[in-house]
Amino acid sequence: MAYRYDRAAESMPRGKLAALQLTRLRATVRNAYANVPMHRRRMRELGLEPGDIRSLEDLARLPFTQKTDLRDHYPFGLFARPRKDLARLHASSGTTGKPTVVGYTARDLATWSGLMARSMACAGVRPGDVVHNAYGYGLFTGGLGAHYGAERLGATVVPMSGGATERQIVLIQDFGARVLCATPSYALAIAEVAEREGVDLKRSKLRIGLFGAEPWSEAMREEIQKRLGLRAVDIYGLSEIMGPGVACECLEAQAGLHGWEDHFIFEVIDPDSGRPVPAGGVGELVITTLTKEALPMLRYRTRDITRLSTGRCECGRSHLRIRRITGRNDDMLIIRGVNVYPSQIEAVLVGLPQIAPHYQLVLERKGSLDHVTVEVEAEQGVAPDPAACARLAKEARHHIKSMIGITTDIVVKQPGEIPRSQGKAVRVRDLRPRPA
Ligand code: DLL
Image (cartoon, rainbow, N blue to C red; front, top):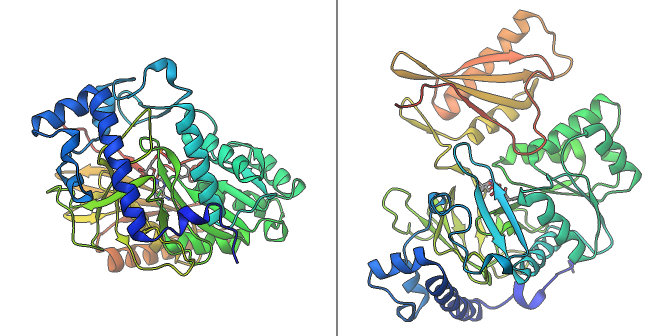
């Protein structure tokens, strides 16, 4: 039977889980109300007091929290503990304005490494494994999150961070890594550099990849598995809630991310109306923390689009599953009325022969209309002559049109011309004029 990090918690009967959630939700609301003026003010405006939260259904009465709230209370305004009680700060850079700052007490850090260890074990990582950690170290939660989780699990961590790809490939082989932690786009970049150098990582000891921090598709999963010879497992998280390890797929099913319901409550809402969608419906993921001390979050709107399923998983875990995140409702592109996520275009491109899985979407305004150019790369070995490129472009254009319904221009670049990521890939270059 597969190694289980915390059997009692992971297989807890759902009734018991719900009772635990309610106790913890009430404590979280009390903490937020007593210690965070914004939460107290908002609850009072709705005529709510902590004692009004008597059942899990009452959660829906609480106001949402958004990323802008963190920015508006920069840097420490939403913390429920004095600054001197914080053991660590992380921050995520936004595209505009101030970063989002998050803080942890020592107990929060212990909870996080415990959940990361649980996630890793769920993905098939075992005590004693060598874990090659190529998530960026620093203010980004990926590096340190995976690091302490792997240590807590009893694995041996190689704290690589991103970049210096040739060196990563040497150390993966020399240290006998069984596990690779990276963004999916960086995992592909590693595969590509290895192939170029004549190294077959399929013959290394790598067996498991823990990939997350950006949207990716099933097609991308297959591609990475094929090229690195490992099982690619999806892991999810966000700094505002904790960091990586909020949810993780199990190795047994690789079919949706078990969201750790003893520490979080997951809801899916209609992003326009804010109302819950019917069970199993697609919408925006909203998360409430249940055990965070320093930064309790009430109904945080993640902007991530997905759906939940509560059906029993073959691995035996009782916690619900978050289906693959298809994109964010704020990176959703609306192109001539069609809602498009970059990951949909990726899924089409990855399926086309002779096109490498690296791409960028360039958005421009031509007249009053949005115009999309998809820059793709020919695979190694495809003739660089204009006729071959034109053929590939025509094919990609046709498939994007027929599968997604939008008209695009395709520019076929030569291998290596699309910038490679060492962390989260930049998929969209938006050159449209900003509204005044
Ligand atoms: O990306 C935490 C993380 C690190 C997760 C390493 C997994 C692995 P942030 O930088 O705050 O935190 O970005 C959070 O990244 O709201 C999603 O939009 C996206 N994201 C994270 N994991 C996934 C995933 C980290 N598995 C934002 N699939 C989230 C799709 C993901 N998108």
